[in-house]
Image (cartoon, rainbow, N blue to C red; front, side):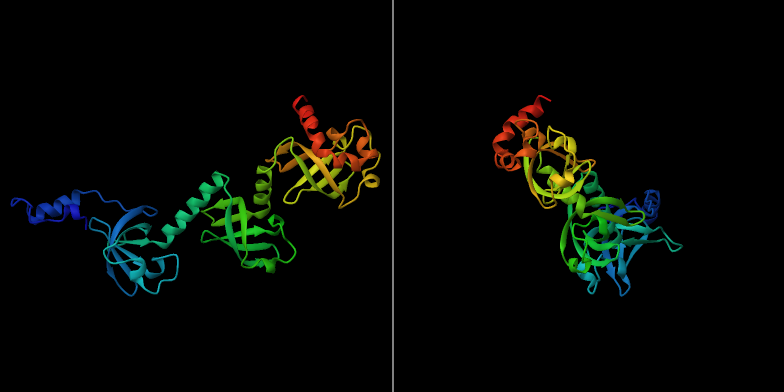
Length: 301
Protein backbone atom coordinates (compact mmCIF):
# COMPACT_ATOMS: atom_id res chain seq x y z
CA UNK A 1 0.00 0.00 0.00
CA UNK A 2 1.21 3.50 -0.84
CA UNK A 3 2.45 5.10 2.44
CA UNK A 4 1.28 8.50 1.20
CA UNK A 5 -2.33 7.25 1.36
CA UNK A 6 -2.07 5.40 4.70
CA UNK A 7 -4.15 7.00 7.50
CA UNK A 8 -2.07 8.42 10.32
CA UNK A 9 -2.77 9.90 13.74
CA UNK A 10 -2.71 13.31 12.07
CA UNK A 11 -5.62 12.42 9.76
CA UNK A 12 -8.40 15.03 10.31
CA UNK A 13 -11.27 13.80 12.44
CA UNK A 14 -13.73 14.44 9.58
CA UNK A 15 -11.78 12.12 7.25
CA UNK A 16 -13.34 8.67 7.74
CA UNK A 17 -12.17 5.22 6.64
CA UNK A 18 -14.73 5.42 3.81
CA UNK A 19 -13.24 8.73 2.71
CA UNK A 20 -9.82 7.12 2.74
CA UNK A 21 -11.07 4.14 0.66
CA UNK A 22 -12.64 6.47 -1.88
CA UNK A 23 -9.41 8.48 -2.10
CA UNK A 24 -7.54 5.25 -2.71
CA UNK A 25 -9.97 4.28 -5.48
CA UNK A 26 -9.54 7.68 -7.11
CA UNK A 27 -5.76 7.33 -7.06
CA UNK A 28 -4.71 6.09 -10.49
CA UNK A 29 -2.64 2.90 -10.40
CA UNK A 30 -2.01 1.22 -13.74
CA UNK A 31 0.12 -1.87 -13.92
CA UNK A 32 1.01 -3.12 -17.40
CA UNK A 33 3.22 -5.96 -18.61
CA UNK A 34 6.73 -4.69 -19.42
CA UNK A 35 6.43 -1.77 -17.01
CA UNK A 36 9.18 -1.20 -14.42
CA UNK A 37 7.85 -0.46 -10.93
CA UNK A 38 9.35 0.18 -7.52
CA UNK A 39 8.16 -1.85 -4.58
CA UNK A 40 9.01 -2.83 -1.02
CA UNK A 41 9.68 -6.45 -0.10
CA UNK A 42 6.95 -7.30 2.43
CA UNK A 43 6.74 -11.05 2.96
CA UNK A 44 8.83 -14.14 2.15
CA UNK A 45 7.35 -17.53 1.38
CA UNK A 46 8.67 -20.84 0.09
CA UNK A 47 7.43 -19.96 -3.39
CA UNK A 48 8.76 -16.40 -3.56
CA UNK A 49 8.19 -12.92 -2.14
CA UNK A 50 5.23 -10.54 -1.85
CA UNK A 51 5.93 -6.95 -2.80
CA UNK A 52 4.08 -3.76 -1.93
CA UNK A 53 3.77 -1.71 -5.12
CA UNK A 54 0.93 0.66 -4.20
CA UNK A 55 -2.81 0.73 -4.76
CA UNK A 56 -5.02 -2.25 -4.03
CA UNK A 57 -2.91 -4.61 -6.13
CA UNK A 58 -0.76 -7.26 -4.55
CA UNK A 59 2.44 -8.30 -6.30
CA UNK A 60 4.39 -11.51 -6.19
CA UNK A 61 7.89 -12.49 -7.31
CA UNK A 62 8.25 -16.26 -7.93
CA UNK A 63 11.41 -17.75 -6.44
CA UNK A 64 12.91 -18.49 -9.87
CA UNK A 65 12.37 -14.84 -10.86
CA UNK A 66 14.08 -13.37 -7.80
CA UNK A 67 17.53 -13.17 -9.39
CA UNK A 68 19.53 -14.02 -12.48
CA UNK A 69 21.48 -16.53 -10.40
CA UNK A 70 20.08 -19.55 -8.58
CA UNK A 71 18.64 -18.49 -5.22
CA UNK A 72 19.20 -20.55 -2.07
CA UNK A 73 18.51 -17.72 0.40
CA UNK A 74 15.69 -15.37 -0.64
CA UNK A 75 16.64 -12.79 1.99
CA UNK A 76 20.05 -12.39 0.34
CA UNK A 77 18.57 -11.09 -2.92
CA UNK A 78 15.24 -9.67 -1.67
CA UNK A 79 15.78 -8.44 1.92
CA UNK A 80 12.60 -7.67 3.85
CA UNK A 81 11.81 -3.96 3.85
CA UNK A 82 14.14 -3.29 0.88
CA UNK A 83 12.75 -1.07 -1.87
CA UNK A 84 13.74 -2.31 -5.33
CA UNK A 85 12.76 -2.09 -8.97
CA UNK A 86 10.91 -4.94 -10.68
CA UNK A 87 9.64 -5.75 -14.16
CA UNK A 88 5.94 -6.59 -14.50
CA UNK A 89 5.73 -9.92 -16.34
CA UNK A 90 1.98 -10.54 -15.88
CA UNK A 91 -0.78 -8.03 -15.33
CA UNK A 92 -3.38 -8.34 -12.57
CA UNK A 93 -5.20 -11.67 -12.46
CA UNK A 94 -8.75 -12.26 -11.18
CA UNK A 95 -7.50 -11.85 -7.62
CA UNK A 96 -5.83 -8.55 -8.51
CA UNK A 97 -2.30 -9.95 -8.18
CA UNK A 98 0.54 -8.70 -10.38
CA UNK A 99 3.50 -10.97 -11.18
CA UNK A 100 6.96 -9.38 -11.02
CA UNK A 101 10.51 -10.39 -11.89
CA UNK A 102 13.96 -9.21 -10.87
CA UNK A 103 15.62 -11.77 -13.13
CA UNK A 104 13.95 -10.49 -16.29
CA UNK A 105 14.64 -6.90 -15.28
CA UNK A 106 18.35 -7.73 -15.03
CA UNK A 107 18.19 -9.49 -18.43
CA UNK A 108 16.44 -6.47 -19.99
CA UNK A 109 19.12 -4.14 -18.66
CA UNK A 110 21.84 -6.39 -20.05
CA UNK A 111 20.28 -6.28 -23.51
CA UNK A 112 19.89 -2.49 -23.23
CA UNK A 113 23.57 -2.21 -22.30
CA UNK A 114 24.62 -4.37 -25.27
CA UNK A 115 22.46 -2.33 -27.66
CA UNK A 116 24.10 0.85 -26.38
CA UNK A 117 27.58 -0.62 -26.82
CA UNK A 118 26.69 -1.74 -30.34
CA UNK A 119 25.43 1.75 -31.19
CA UNK A 120 28.66 3.27 -29.85
CA UNK A 121 30.74 0.64 -31.70
CA UNK A 122 32.36 -0.50 -28.46
CA UNK A 123 34.13 -3.83 -28.10
CA UNK A 124 33.44 -6.07 -25.09
CA UNK A 125 35.15 -9.03 -23.46
CA UNK A 126 33.42 -12.41 -23.37
CA UNK A 127 34.26 -15.84 -21.94
CA UNK A 128 34.05 -18.93 -24.14
CA UNK A 129 31.63 -21.46 -22.60
CA UNK A 130 31.29 -24.09 -25.34
CA UNK A 131 31.88 -24.96 -28.98
CA UNK A 132 30.39 -26.77 -31.97
CA UNK A 133 31.42 -27.14 -35.60
CA UNK A 134 29.93 -23.74 -36.44
CA UNK A 135 31.69 -21.67 -33.80
CA UNK A 136 31.77 -21.02 -30.05
CA UNK A 137 29.20 -20.00 -27.45
CA UNK A 138 30.18 -17.28 -25.00
CA UNK A 139 29.07 -15.51 -21.84
CA UNK A 140 28.57 -11.85 -22.75
CA UNK A 141 27.75 -9.74 -19.68
CA UNK A 142 25.71 -12.68 -18.38
CA UNK A 143 23.92 -13.37 -21.68
CA UNK A 144 24.56 -16.24 -24.09
CA UNK A 145 26.20 -15.19 -27.33
CA UNK A 146 27.66 -16.92 -30.37
CA UNK A 147 30.79 -16.31 -32.46
CA UNK A 148 30.74 -18.01 -35.89
CA UNK A 149 33.91 -19.92 -36.78
CA UNK A 150 34.59 -17.48 -39.64
CA UNK A 151 34.70 -14.62 -37.13
CA UNK A 152 37.31 -16.20 -34.87
CA UNK A 153 41.02 -15.47 -35.22
CA UNK A 154 41.87 -19.09 -34.27
CA UNK A 155 39.65 -21.54 -36.09
CA UNK A 156 41.48 -24.87 -35.95
CA UNK A 157 40.83 -26.31 -32.46
CA UNK A 158 37.72 -24.62 -31.07
CA UNK A 159 37.69 -26.86 -27.98
CA UNK A 160 41.00 -25.28 -26.96
CA UNK A 161 39.22 -21.91 -26.62
CA UNK A 162 37.05 -23.18 -23.75
CA UNK A 163 37.34 -20.80 -20.79
CA UNK A 164 39.33 -18.18 -22.69
CA UNK A 165 38.46 -14.49 -22.67
CA UNK A 166 38.06 -12.88 -26.12
CA UNK A 167 37.58 -9.28 -27.22
CA UNK A 168 34.67 -9.02 -29.65
CA UNK A 169 32.49 -6.56 -31.53
CA UNK A 170 28.83 -6.94 -32.52
CA UNK A 171 27.28 -8.51 -35.61
CA UNK A 172 23.68 -8.76 -34.32
CA UNK A 173 21.97 -7.76 -31.09
CA UNK A 174 18.27 -8.72 -31.04
CA UNK A 175 16.56 -8.72 -27.61
CA UNK A 176 13.23 -9.89 -29.08
CA UNK A 177 14.66 -13.10 -30.52
CA UNK A 178 17.39 -13.31 -27.84
CA UNK A 179 19.94 -13.44 -30.65
CA UNK A 180 23.46 -12.20 -29.93
CA UNK A 181 26.08 -12.77 -32.63
CA UNK A 182 29.62 -11.48 -32.13
CA UNK A 183 32.93 -11.23 -34.00
CA UNK A 184 36.44 -11.51 -32.65
CA UNK A 185 37.91 -10.93 -36.11
CA UNK A 186 36.19 -7.55 -36.57
CA UNK A 187 37.19 -6.40 -33.08
CA UNK A 188 40.82 -7.32 -33.77
CA UNK A 189 40.64 -5.58 -37.13
CA UNK A 190 39.12 -2.44 -35.61
CA UNK A 191 41.86 -2.34 -32.97
CA UNK A 192 44.48 -2.66 -35.72
CA UNK A 193 42.86 0.07 -37.81
CA UNK A 194 42.91 2.44 -34.84
CA UNK A 195 46.71 2.07 -34.74
CA UNK A 196 47.19 2.81 -38.44
CA UNK A 197 47.24 6.07 -40.34
CA UNK A 198 47.85 7.12 -43.93
CA UNK A 199 51.57 7.73 -44.52
CA UNK A 200 52.65 5.23 -41.87
CA UNK A 201 55.48 2.81 -42.69
CA UNK A 202 54.46 -0.74 -41.84
CA UNK A 203 56.28 -4.04 -41.98
CA UNK A 204 54.85 -7.49 -42.61
CA UNK A 205 55.15 -10.68 -44.60
CA UNK A 206 53.63 -11.68 -47.89
CA UNK A 207 50.69 -13.91 -46.96
CA UNK A 208 49.24 -14.48 -50.41
CA UNK A 209 50.05 -13.68 -54.03
CA UNK A 210 47.33 -12.96 -56.57
CA UNK A 211 47.60 -11.75 -60.19
CA UNK A 212 46.31 -8.34 -59.05
CA UNK A 213 48.56 -7.83 -56.00
CA UNK A 214 50.20 -8.96 -52.77
CA UNK A 215 48.35 -9.58 -49.50
CA UNK A 216 50.54 -8.54 -46.57
CA UNK A 217 50.15 -10.01 -43.08
CA UNK A 218 50.63 -7.10 -40.68
CA UNK A 219 50.09 -9.21 -37.58
CA UNK A 220 46.52 -8.43 -36.55
CA UNK A 221 45.37 -7.17 -39.95
CA UNK A 222 45.99 -7.77 -43.65
CA UNK A 223 46.86 -5.12 -46.21
CA UNK A 224 46.98 -5.20 -49.99
CA UNK A 225 49.66 -3.85 -52.31
CA UNK A 226 47.89 -3.64 -55.64
CA UNK A 227 50.08 -4.54 -58.62
CA UNK A 228 50.00 -0.89 -59.74
CA UNK A 229 51.35 0.16 -56.32
CA UNK A 230 54.29 -2.26 -56.23
CA UNK A 231 56.59 -0.49 -58.68
CA UNK A 232 56.62 2.38 -61.16
CA UNK A 233 57.69 -0.18 -63.74
CA UNK A 234 55.53 -2.87 -65.33
CA UNK A 235 55.65 -6.26 -63.60
CA UNK A 236 55.02 -9.23 -65.84
CA UNK A 237 54.48 -11.81 -63.09
CA UNK A 238 54.18 -11.34 -59.34
CA UNK A 239 54.58 -15.10 -58.81
CA UNK A 240 58.10 -15.11 -60.24
CA UNK A 241 59.12 -11.90 -58.45
CA UNK A 242 57.83 -12.48 -54.91
CA UNK A 243 57.30 -15.44 -52.60
CA UNK A 244 55.02 -16.34 -49.67
CA UNK A 245 56.56 -15.45 -46.30
CA UNK A 246 58.88 -12.83 -47.77
CA UNK A 247 59.28 -9.79 -45.42
CA UNK A 248 58.33 -6.45 -46.91
CA UNK A 249 57.92 -2.82 -45.87
CA UNK A 250 55.29 -0.50 -47.35
CA UNK A 251 53.50 2.80 -46.87
CA UNK A 252 49.82 2.95 -45.89
CA UNK A 253 48.06 4.94 -48.62
CA UNK A 254 44.40 4.33 -47.75
CA UNK A 255 42.31 2.92 -44.89
CA UNK A 256 38.68 1.92 -45.48
CA UNK A 257 37.49 0.65 -42.10
CA UNK A 258 33.94 0.15 -43.36
CA UNK A 259 35.08 -2.34 -45.99
CA UNK A 260 37.96 -3.65 -43.89
CA UNK A 261 40.60 -2.64 -46.43
CA UNK A 262 44.13 -1.38 -45.89
CA UNK A 263 45.85 -0.25 -49.07
CA UNK A 264 49.66 -0.23 -49.16
CA UNK A 265 52.33 0.95 -51.56
CA UNK A 266 56.01 0.22 -52.19
CA UNK A 267 55.91 2.15 -55.47
CA UNK A 268 56.27 5.49 -53.67
CA UNK A 269 59.43 4.29 -51.94
CA UNK A 270 61.27 4.04 -55.29
CA UNK A 271 63.75 6.73 -56.32
CA UNK A 272 63.29 5.74 -59.96
CA UNK A 273 60.99 3.37 -61.90
CA UNK A 274 61.83 -0.28 -61.33
CA UNK A 275 64.20 0.29 -58.40
CA UNK A 276 62.26 -2.11 -56.16
CA UNK A 277 62.57 -4.87 -58.76
CA UNK A 278 66.28 -4.24 -59.33
CA UNK A 279 67.39 -3.69 -55.74
CA UNK A 280 64.66 -4.59 -53.27
CA UNK A 281 67.13 -5.09 -50.43
CA UNK A 282 68.33 -1.48 -50.65
CA UNK A 283 64.79 -0.06 -50.92
CA UNK A 284 63.68 -2.03 -47.87
CA UNK A 285 66.79 -1.14 -45.84
CA UNK A 286 66.32 2.60 -46.43
CA UNK A 287 62.49 2.57 -46.32
CA UNK A 288 62.32 4.64 -43.13
CA UNK A 289 64.51 7.37 -44.66
CA UNK A 290 62.48 7.31 -47.90
CA UNK A 291 59.18 7.61 -46.01
CA UNK A 292 59.32 11.43 -45.62
CA UNK A 293 59.57 11.97 -49.38
CA UNK A 294 56.90 9.31 -49.93
CA UNK A 295 54.47 11.05 -47.56
CA UNK A 296 55.00 14.37 -49.32
CA UNK A 297 54.11 12.73 -52.63
CA UNK A 298 50.90 11.42 -51.00
CA UNK A 299 49.99 14.89 -49.75
CA UNK A 300 50.55 16.40 -53.17
CA UNK A 301 48.63 13.65 -54.97
